[in-house]
Image: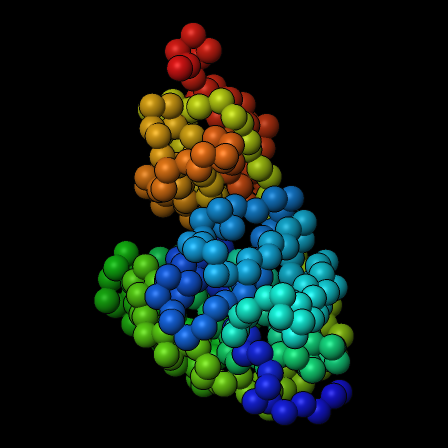
Length: 335
C-alpha cells in the first residue's frame, strides 16, 4: 500500500443505513447548510434506475454521480474505484472544485467492502482519506431490520457515528431499548437522535473518526477480499409513465397495497406527476408508513414524468404496475 501525507488527502464520508432510514434527508441537510467547501456526492441505488439524485438539493456547486445496476459493496465496486479516480484526476487538473466526498450507499449495502476500497486500492489510497462511516438507524423499524438483515447489523457494527431517526414515532422506552441494543453492537460509536436530518454537522464532517485498528479487531479479514451476497428474495423494479395520475386513485391504490404487502415493501420512493398540480410530488414510504409532499416546480426543459422505485421481498411487480396504470387520467380529461 502507498504511504501518503494525510493532510493532502480528500476526506470522504460513507453515509449508510438500511432502506428508508433517512440517509438522503441527512445528505440534503449537509448540501444545504454546510459551508465548509463544495461536496462531491456518489449516489448508489439498488436496481436498474435511481431516484435519489432527483430528490437531492442541487445549486450547481455539487458534483453528483449516480451508480445504479447493483450494490456498491459488490457488483459495482470497480465502478466506485473508477469514479473516485476520475474525480481526483479532474480535481487535480482544475476541472472540478470540491473539498470532500460523500458516498451514500444503497440501504442494502454492507459498508465493509466499501471502506475496504480506501485501503486496498493504491490509486484511491493516494488521493482519499476515509474520514468516517455515519450510519442512520430508523428507530421505528430497526428492531426488525437488525434481526432479519445482516446488512443492517454490519452498518451498525462499522459505524463511527450512529444517528437514530424517527425517534418521534416510538415511545421513550422503545428508543431506550434500541439505543441499548445499538450500544451493545457497537460500543465505540456515539449514538445521537436526528430529526429530519437536523444534527450538528461539525460532529459528522472532518472528524477523522474512522479507526482501522478498531475495525480489524472486530473484522480480522477486513483487508482481505470480502465476498458479499444479498438475499435473493429482495428485488427492485421501477414504474414510469408520462401520463398524469389521479391523486385520489393513487392514494387509494397505495393504501390497498400497503395494507396487503406493507411488511414486504422495504422501501418505495419516487416523483409523481399528479393531474392538476403544477409542482412535483415527492412520494416515499417504508413498510406501512408512507407519505407525499409537494416539491419544487417542474423545470422548463424537464420532462413531466412519474417514476417510482420499489424495493421489497417477492413483490408482485405486474400487479403494482397494472394498479398504477389504472390511476392514469383518462385522455379526455387531460389538459
